[in-house]
Image 1 (tube, rainbow, N blue to C red):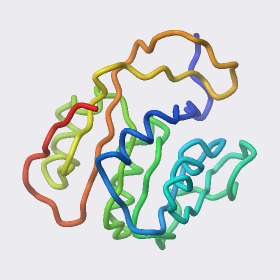
Image 2: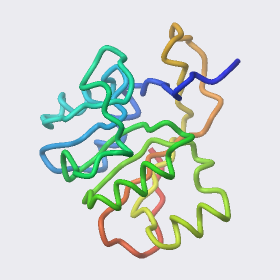
Image 3: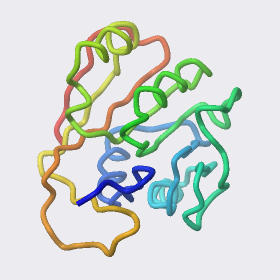
Length: 172
């Protein structure tokens, strides 16, 4: 199976719920890769005000907004499932524009790699990593949902501005 063109894999509600059981964010949260609004809508259920944007139009939020080109932050907190192929750039950009707390749903394999360690983790380590004890089922956004067990390990990676110690690891 080929990857979706822009890495749109909608987030299952249980993934966002698992994060919100362990983390809180400022009242206003930016979801810069909102897709069809899966994360945004779940954040709203928890009484967050959400700024939802995406480069592409998937029927939700403000489309045509390239997060990597934004020079100002729309909120002090970010919660998103970014395009995996651009995850390094998304995280680095959030740090560069001064986002205070940001959470990224990524494949657990994001921990791997010498270059990523040197360029990101050694300078800006995440504060917490929440690995899923049961794999999430994620499918391409342009396909029908399929009731199969997940085959890829995912985790929430959470950064706090100014944090420099090793991350804590939790299972959710």
